[in-house]
Image (cartoon, rainbow over all chains, first blue to last red; front, side):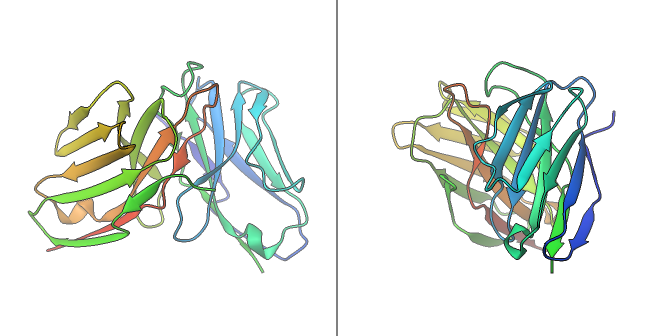
Length: 116
Length: 112
């Protein structure tokens, strides 16, 4: 079956532009996560949804970052007024269960954002 | 900030040899997971070990967990060129938090 898909795969933005990154989770997966991975580092948690509810947004680095999942399926991560430090790979993951932390998270290929 | 630390940061071995990577963490966990990431590709889940487990096997992979030392190790036996990748440990700390906390990874290179 289809895995987690993300689009676009690559995005180049000029500093100050707004960007929107899309994630299509595995069908039927309740939980959805966004992570940010800087070059040479491990992923860092940004935010978590259970269905349409954003239950944890503790990792969002500033109020320029906003995520939504209005119908409990596709999610969009929006970054306003992009800065060079936002350059990273943005990874989306989904999992089946609401049982806390016990289910495997399946990751998409990521969107590589470069801010010039 | 990342909580896990992985050791070594980079490892280069000959094909057929065994590779061992270590991971340490700071606070108690619900479970610990290992992921592989090939260059330019997403993370692939390898194995999950729960806090009440000490060892798990999957094919050529063996994971151990020592909660008293807050550490885990991943052993890959009979390595192959296709095992060349970055390997990350990720911890879930429970308490209502679903998120994973990743280490900085070990870059493994298998030389033919």
